[in-house]
Length: 165
Image (tube, rainbow, N blue to C red; front, side, top):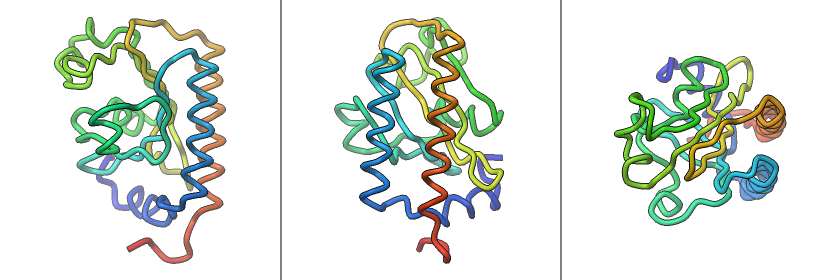
C-alpha cells in the first residue's frame, strides 16, 4: 500500500513545493498544535522509502533541517497503511515503537495522526507529537480529523495538470 503506484501518482500531481501552500500548511499545523496542546504538528507525505514534511510547527534540530525521516521510523506510515487515525499514547511503553529512534533518541512519546485523503488515496497524515505520555480525547481527535480534511481540500487546489518532475 505504501508503494502503490496510484497513490504515488496522486502525490506526484500536487505542487508540494509551492511556497504559498507551505505557508498555509504551516498555519494549520500551528493552529492544530495549539488546539491539541502539543508542541509539534506536521503535515507528512509518505513515500515508499521516506516521509517528508510539507507543513510543520514546533520541529527543531536535525529533523527540522532534514525535513523528514525514513519510512521505517514513520508513525504516519501506519495511518497510510490502515487508512484510519493512528494514536500512540506512550510510545516509550509501546513495544512497537519503544526502539524507534524518534522515541529512543529524540524523546517523542505521544502521537496522534489522521489520514490526508486526496482522490481516494491516503497520501500521508496530519499529526501531533509530544514529549510526554498523553491520552487524546474524542474532541481532540475530531479536531485533528477536521484539520486533515482541510489540508486535503487545500492540496486539491494545488494539483498540477501534469505530474511534477
